[in-house]
Image (cartoon, rainbow, N blue to C red; front, side, top):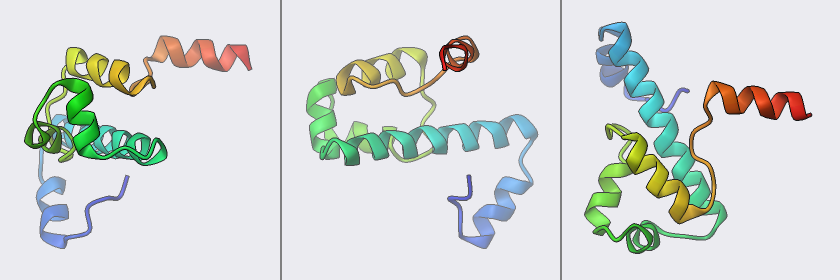
Length: 99
């Protein structure tokens, strides 16, 4: 995913240990996906905040791209939006077999 366009930030990420690079990449992917779901459903961050019982500032942090999501927070977001956010390898395999 190439969401980082500032050369200094790109260079900083390049110098990170591999596990940190994976963290940044996955976190950005999740935030981008959630933002896409909100857009498709014509929802704003404010709406998601209400659905989650959180402040708009907390949701803004969730969608910043560098939030350390927990399975619990992802489950809450999935339940609030009525749409899966993450796909486990097992779930992905089952979906492919069903096709």
